[in-house]
Length: 172
Image (cartoon, rainbow, N blue to C red; front, side, top):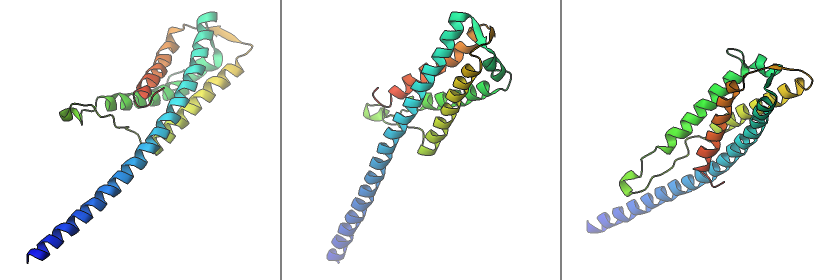
């Protein structure tokens, strides 16, 4: 009977080892994917930051807001929708940096809070926002009207926050 007990224990160890190996493979795969997702999102945010900073610089320099941006910035307009979506993403990333899962072990674990589909959606929103800024500037090459720059400065600061938050997940 002792032989059966030992055999069962060995089989259990083999099964557990297989499960652990599979979990490690899955984790490794997900970490690699997350790294690529983080890099993709980071690159898009940096590009958006560049475009939005250019818009902000134009407004600060000339003290005027392109009329297409004014139209897009109306209540419930595209820019407000983009701002809302990007703000949600920033809050999701901020929550993840406060993760205390490994606190008992004396270290803080960062777990990437987005799956690939969520990153794809975020990248799509950022690309649409970049396109909107670019097209609005293109439409207003010849005509601009008065604007108060403080209205756009809040949007620019969100992009700075994204770059900072993403840098906590991957080295810049």
